[in-house]
Image 1 (cartoon, rainbow, N blue to C red):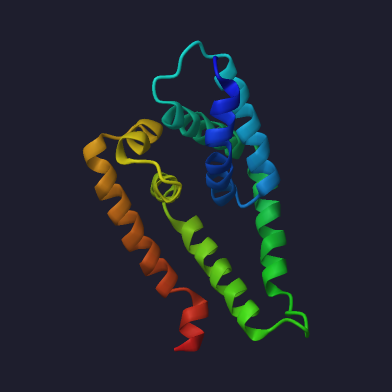
Image 2: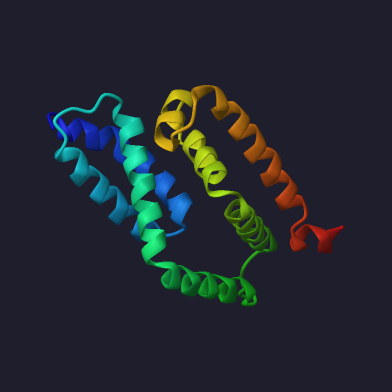
Length: 168
């Protein structure tokens, strides 16, 4: 693969952000990104670099999810315990509210169908409809529908979260 420095400089940060949002673990995201770039080095030519990288990264995540189901359940339990811990006395209320909002948003995102979640996160990273379609194996015309459905469902889930019901 020619021009690997440019490929890394241009796509590493967005790919790691996408993977971090997808996995909820920056270290794991870095590992998957590293494997993705190693695979890119083995390619003679990449027609659509960004779509290819996001496709490979998404497939690596899917493979790892299948292999690490027990590990993921354990991490979810640890996250749930951390969310249940009382806030530190010196923390301002606004920081706690932001943390609760992030946690609720993360839980809502995790409840979406996998394809919907991936489409939303890829769009958030700036991928266009063609790139998302290539990465997820969708028709370009169905990307908008997928994104609209995912956004609508995310809002529904978020609004129904226990955090919101307590405040009402």
